[in-house]
Image (cartoon, rainbow, N blue to C red; front, side, top):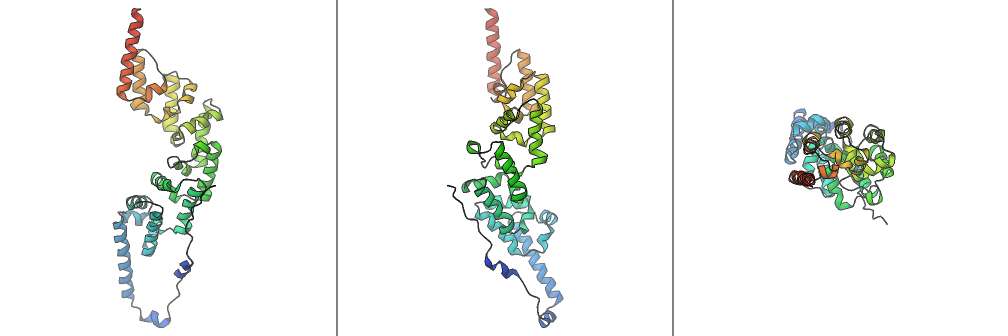
Amino acid sequence: MTLRLPIPTAPNSAKAHLSFPPTASAAASASASGATVDSGLKFREKLVYLQSLKVNPTKALYKNPNIRSAPLKTLRSITQCLASMGLESSAVSRILDMYPQLLTSDPYVDIYPIFDFLLNVVEIPFPEVRKTIIRCPRLLVSNPETQLKPTFEFLTELGFAGSNKFTSQTTLLLVSSLELTLKPKIEYLMGLGLDYNDVRNMVLRSPGLLTFSIENNYKPKVDYFLNEMNGDLEELKRFPQYFSFSLERKIKPRHHLLVEYGFSISLSDMLKVSDGEFSSQLIEGRLRMLDEREY
């Protein structure tokens, strides 16, 4: 049975925000200069509040002009909302500086539904929600119905369920575009000659595959693996983590050394070990080759 954590609902007093036009006599008594001063003071209060959050006011106002007209309590309500889900003030500050559009959002309309989706649909345990948001704050500016839900259903069908269900580390996949990001990567890998189950198993073993660029990661590494290393696709199936290593800083230098020493090892043995361990493997391999020649 799934334990459903209740998400706050909008209080009835929310209707109290409605205001009515002042009477003619009250309007007449209001001084235009006084109203300007009052507006200036309120705006200054908001700037001071943003600075207290370590949010860059200039950037925030540029990206979200609605801050100028929003009451200070609106800005405060979003920080309280994020804090209620376990986010420390430093994390809240970083997130609001990255996404200042959140400062004028309605927690009950825009934010709590996302937390509800993570808790009760994706089934991220409450203590892990904080880690989830810190790792991928973009979740907070994603629509749960039009973006997160379709992606969740696609990835669940792909195999992110049961023992492979989403964690705070893999929920960042939920912000990916189905049509522009996820499906093209699946199709590219299948286009290499891998079948759907091969690709599915590779992705489940190494979810980072779905975050890599086809042009900047897949294509150059596949080209090098097939044409320079004379690699076999079976080995990529066994070690999909190959795509997570730097081509220029690790794959090419280590492959060149293996060629120079005149022997080969598996992708896993070639890439997973430290530089020191790799050097030891080269020396041991070279010594074995010399011993074999003597006999």
